Image (tube, rainbow, N blue to C red):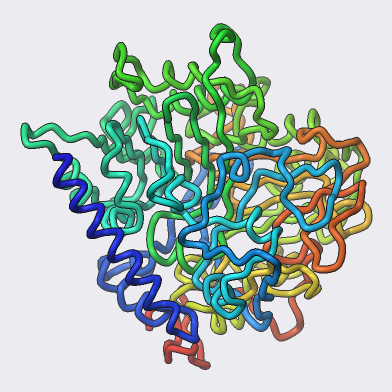
Length: 603
């Protein structure tokens, strides 16, 4: 088996390097057209969402306090007009061979900006490097700015395989996602096949694990990989639904890696499906941090640990493994061996079920409590910005009585009496932004907003462009379809953020949850249908002063003592739609073709 794997790794690495060399000869974004052709081959015909790892989120139409009904959630769209700025600096290291240290990847106190900033604090958030970034690198002879290197990473870099001769040996791997193109992952990161224990949790039926299963099967028939499909919509207490009930519109939507090494664990919580379109072309974000073993603090625990273990328990995975070569234990027991006390973020999970309102452990309840505890914005009347890649059937009652009170901490009465346009901004791509994006209309398949949902009168005054804004933000990704999901509240100056959430949650009732009252018993509960996971950042959690705020990176100045730079890929105060702007609808056909001659997702 070892000899076979070694040969496979060599072949895969040669292919990977050959693609890199071929790409360097191109003067356009690599593989943009061929990506469309490949996607059509890899995913079955039928639904538009099958072409390019498209719709990865189910949602429901729901009335507050009543049983939910179907609502199609939406994945992110593309952008236009604004060409991504090229980063130029003193570094001449070539990216494929550059070694990123564990500290640079995950230490929240490391230097990560061109200016000094507030106490040299770096937010442990990365943007995934796209093909367009690689093109810009070639245009600058591979020279990246210091801020680009500290805020961007490829998937291989996130996983620790940026230099095959220096990576740490994995003991085990846990991967959770909606869609995993196993053949694509095997070609991109073949080293993962050598991991002694690997567990994949996935939601989509198109995530065929057979290529990985064959590659990891030993001569005696034992497979070193475990594959668990999670579908809350299946029968309860079944192999695909470990829960007590069936959730008709439930989805496993979390994106996460947990990687166990000899003496530490890496946690990666991100926004991308594992497929070519998501990894190479779309705007994505990731939180990454390493944590050591507890050592003498074996009996201690912290909030991050308890939240992570509680979330993983909902998967119902009871198989014992010899994680460190010793006694076989369950995954949750293995996680308890690590010291997560250095985590300066709070996990924001959603799990399917009827939850107790007073416990505030999931969805909007957890977000509201986290903002109260860790963000200095009580009484702030500034808008909440929601940037997402899936739009379901939203209603005014849920937005005003549940979502806004949880995110802006205004009481429901005040929220109901204040114009919603003063409280909420929704960043969602226009038709033109999708048409002129790197992927063209087919990239809009990852923004599955139906005509019925996106054209609701309630939303029109709230919609903001993805690609608009000042041009002094070097990390705006206006020409990439946004699959990243971010939520924050604007600071009083409208140029900063009081707090920031990077998450798999879209703006949907089934993902965030809603308070419901039982018609039979009169009791209240909080109902969620999705598995989701996000990370909450605030200056206070990072150890900054109460007056400190997050600001986007700038080409002019990142050195304010009252601000911490964040790699935000769009304008912090997004521009509202213009008179001629229309929200993207993935089930429409359009009169003007994209660069590939298509007139919509379907062709």
